[in-house]
Image 1 (tube, rainbow, N blue to C red):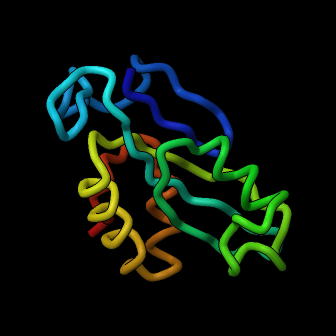
Image 2: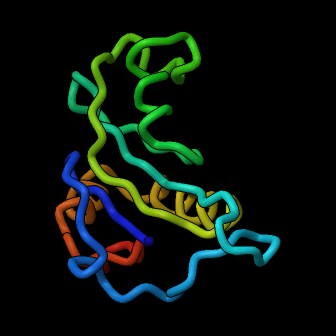
Image 3: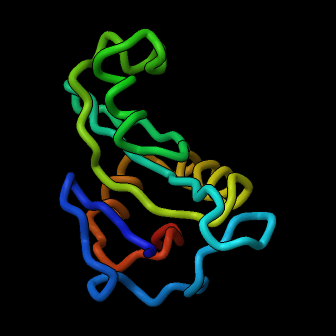
Length: 123
């Protein structure tokens, strides 16, 4: 199931934009392979942190409660999930992360506010 989370609220498949990959498979082409996620966190100071992982819930827990969280987020706890997107492999997630990180803060906020986004930066 392809899913998207906006500000902590999990959206059902029917509420998402059309998926270019209707049958999620991993890089090896087998169903059930590990999916990758791009996630955006909002830190306690209002700043944004972007990363990729195979398990968003675990990663948010690490950011909030362990030393495994990013050095950037440790002094800015607690962090909350702002939005997440699912990708078929690490390469796709990394490309999307790089694209998102290149946006200005204003564009990131504008883009995060768009519900029906397919990870294309706003014009």
